[in-house]
Length: 628
Ligand code: MG
Ligand code: MG
Image (cartoon, rainbow, N blue to C red; front, side, top):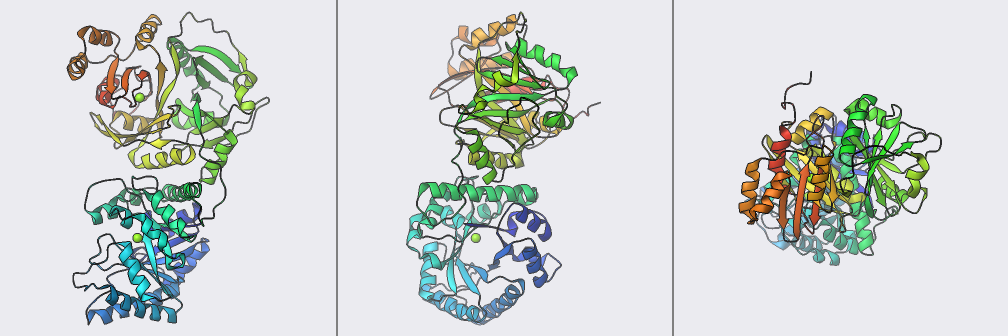
């Protein structure tokens, strides 16, 4: 399986694009005519530049409005094709993409189109070139790959073949199994794109909202399974028109693109016997739970953080044998506080200040999880070990944080005992009944949300939920969740559209994305609330108006609503059960804790978000006022 991407998919000038594409590990690139026209070098130099990057030009595109033209337009169309052939030969590619005619004067007729392609095939053959025909979803007469295939079949010319594009087929809900009977040598290349399900004009949808396979809602995997069934093992080429990508970082988008193709190829290989050849990699990691969350803080801030954790019912249970690292525990929750100036924690502190910069996950096989991540283009993370330290497999996360993996089958299972000296915490404060981590909430810029989603779902055995809009008084935050079936992994991703929202403020002030809140679970939120209050922990005050509304919305008993109100507990319900939430105030630039009780409920309290955001904002210094 070879990977390619169209230059139109990413931002920058041609040189920047090629650099990013090569760096991400692609084998080939589709040259979009406009990217070439806007560049100052000759076709020969462009071709050389591509090859200097170690890439192959997979095709040149697009050639429009070709088949079924009346004279004298028909003759002119062939002249136009000859000029493109000149250019292709200079550039050094043998394949051109002809998309189905959209001209109002095109005449239609399968045999007429086939005859035109036969003639084009004869002209191409003289130069050793090939022509691939693609049905645009909005083509005037041809807008279905089955009709395009019939034209190619009737043209019956070795230099004429078919180009299949997942967007054009799937956007029109054409049965993908019709692909299975196409001979693989007649498929000249496969173009891939996904898209979110939006009901809109096909052309507009295609030109602005395409995204990488796995990032959208189209059944691209089914499409690819049908392609693979033909025995096709040529290029898989991304053709993504997306306004956000064209405004984003070329390197990041290219990395996402390559990851999406490798992940797709891996899924196809696991689902059905196919001709796809790609390097073996372990299956997605099965997450058994969050092992720990690690904070980086400086010496001066540790006592404030330790006091806060103790008031939340945590006990200081261990001190690292060779580093300034402490662990606090309650139930199955381990919070690691790292004040070591050496190593990545120190670097992260220097860059972002106090933050929850690392997460450890219990998985079935820690080394396998890292091997898979690396195969998908993630970066392995390593730093020098201190005496007695166990090497913990890790990768760099998307936002600059670290993701560690632990498993029960290796020495990692006893990491707490082997690396830490036990400590007997003499605090008078009591545990409050926290049992585990319900979810980890990460915040990033909205335009990076898809990158995070793809990263997690490609590496971990988890799925994404539909996007939910969270209304912040200062703008919208788009939220999507990565979770697994058993609920042992729940990561909420919040994409901030502007820096005035609570989420946007957090990113701007911590100079990066990352964990903004941790939600702990309890089996009895009222008991937890009472215990917190005995520990002197002040929970976030919720507006009394919320409770009036809640009582009416769910038809709650006034005595029950009063209990919720007394403890500042938020409430929600779905078809599966109930959900209770309470919050800490915000700390620093917007970090906070949440405590939840979940009985079957599957959501995350989105309906309550507007109330808790309003309450949390009261604790921040005025947003937008520069730090002095
Ligand atoms: Mg296409
Ligand atoms: Mg939450």
